[in-house]
Image (cartoon, rainbow, N blue to C red; front, side):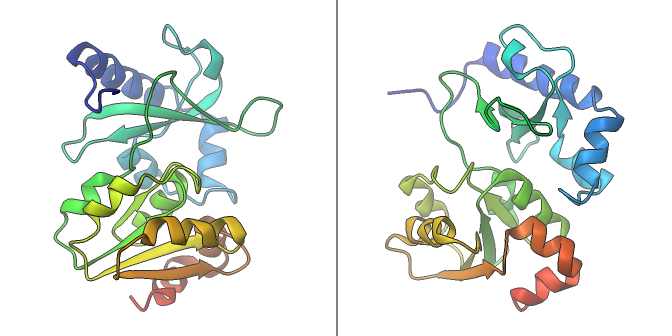
Amino acid sequence: MKAVVPSQSSRLFTEKTSRAYHDQLDDEALAYLTGPERHLTEATIASHRFGVVRSPEPGHEAVRNYLSIPYLTPDGECIAIRFRRLGDGPTPKYRSIAGDIPRLYGTEALQLGTRNICVTEGEFDRAIATQAGLPAVGAPGANSWEPVWRRLLVQFDAVFVLHDDDDAGRDFVTKVAGGLDNVRPIPMSRGDVTSFYGEHGREGLRAKLGA
């Protein structure tokens, strides 16, 4: 069985690396993150510690020029990093470090004491939901949901699944729901959370949930 908690040396390396990649953010990466594809504010970028891999740490050569997506604990410590290709290209869009396991993204939202929570299909959609003032966690993709994560959602009155408006998104709702009776599917009309936010803004996304 794979360890869920990384070793101390691994945690120190990952924490240091996440900060180094955040410091490597440049005009190209910021233009992508704040532009029409992602709509993120600089405050959101900073709080999520997004970065870019310009000078790879040992073992990260394959993700040179990828964006870095740190997985932070509620205490702000980075325990894992995923990577997203910056722009188009023949390489995989998303990469994880070999041997890493799927993790729920943004788990600090589970400890905010709110009655409701949102679940998104990806890390950047989670960042947008948070930017709109919505407590949210994200799965690392529609096909990466782990049934054990449902235990974390039982405590909430309502779990709003902000899903893509396609078959994969509807399948994602089914995976999240399982035996839960508090799931509320919220389709993002003609796209995903980010595209909906880009078209309707913060208040439009909140209104979609009745917030």
